[in-house]
Image (cartoon, rainbow, N blue to C red; front, side, top):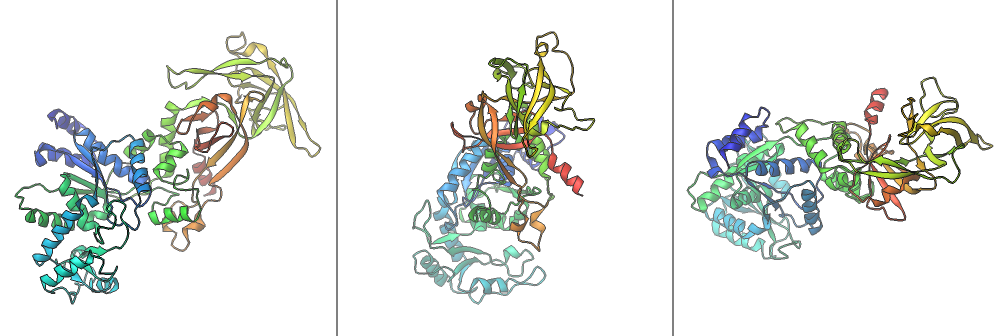
Length: 572
């Protein structure tokens, strides 16, 4: 780590407390000037945006201070874990723009953790307990009353060693016995009251097969794994703050057994979790949504999963900008989903290609335009980019416009299409509405207008001003498309606090609207999932993975404005 980088960081006024601690450690020469972090997910599900917050701080701190960030899978519970999740986690991290230095697994250390547990038993600091989980919990006491010793707490060391060995041979059934650390049943910190450090799980492991039947608990495996790897800063969320003393306790015991006389010990620091309005982050609830088909898989664009946001069209930069905006603190907060969407809009405005799409079409016929004439009009892909390329869009006598862009009897301040009023067709001509056609039941069928041939760009009348501008596509030069409009998954701000209701009852019935009669310009057939588009005057969109040459499908990423917030204020 260079002195220059430390100085540059110190001069900044807005370092969060985690980065400030890292800078201080570097200035004091701790850990031989190293910064090493890790991101340690359990491969039992797909990552959500809360994990993105941890990924962002773990990887960015290592990157910023010439350090190392490793990816380590906490695979200590084979019942819930799968290679599918391992692969998905890797994909999500890479999509966010981060790269790990090494990949490790907690299972890499199973033998070392086992040997450490044996040493604790030999030292009289661990024992086999044959009580049920309910009996052990009942003996723990409360934060204000001490716990009670297990009747097995002082069993002979040789007996505990023998039983511990049997826990891994298959002779012991699940729940029949556990290994507990012998610490202090009266400790004010409940986690010190003889915590369970090993239990029996008879389930095939995705990496170690059936070699192990006894598996370490998180509190026993996590800190030791950090130590084995050389982690200097173990960054995690606030719920692990009360676990930190136990984290340090086990590492200190391990150092003693390894006869390592050094000051090095990973420093655990905790930050606030990411909570979003109209969202649930609980893995259990997210799994329920998927398993009960309340959403269409883990990557449903309504899900708060990273793959869901990716499919919806969010950019990794917008997510990271949002995370930097809300910051890292010690205080829990509920962040407004609109703030995330604002970050998405700001980023996509710089990168999205502007295109034309009509979602609720009505035919517009320019009666004085030559019947077989077709013009190629030039459109700039992104006016925010001075080096933006351009593409052509066909213009003809018959166009599709949005149904709600026409009103036969319009109010005074209506500046779209209505009889006798002029509007500009975007990138094309000024037209004046001359009337409309309805069927016998009064349903609108067609709208008519006349164009002013001198108002195209470069023509004498191009500078003439009108108040309304409408988007359109040529009816004979467009492609049919399906458009999926996504919105908030839940109807209440915080579905986690609605104690009297099942969270399923709070799902927004309008969280997905599918429009099947849409038209888009032909240019869109060249785009792929993950590309960013702005449907002019409508919002930001991306092609969905279901999209095919013969059936284009687009997902709405976010509207051009926060319509949800506006509606909510009106309802209140």
